[in-house]
Image (cartoon, rainbow, N blue to C red; front, side):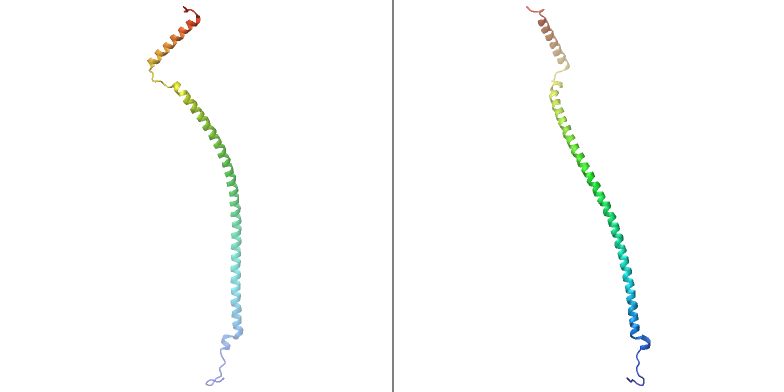
Length: 141
C-alpha cells in the first residue's frame, strides 16, 4: 500500500502485536484468579467461624432449654404441693371458723350489765343450794 511516499507499516513496534495483547489478557486473568481465590478463602474462613460460633450457641441454648424444663417441672410439682397445702389449710380454717361461730354466742355479752350478771349468778347459786338441801333430805316437809 502506498500513501504519499511511504508505505504504511502500522504500529507494530509500539503495540507489540497479538502476543502482547494475549500477555495482558493472561496478566488480567491471573490477577482476577488471585483476587477470586483470596475472596473465596476469606468467605470460607468467615463461614467456618460462623458455623463454629453457631454450634457453640446452639449447645448453650439447648442446655438452657434442658435446665428451664427441669426448673419448670420442679416448679409445677411445688405448685401442686402448695395448692394441696392451701386447700388443706383452707379446710382447717373453715372448720375453725364454724367452731368459732358456734362458740361465739356463748362468749358474747348478751346485753347484761355487770350488776345484772352478778345478781343472776347469786340467784343461780341460791337455787343450787336449795336443790342440794332438798336432795340431802333436810328440808323435806
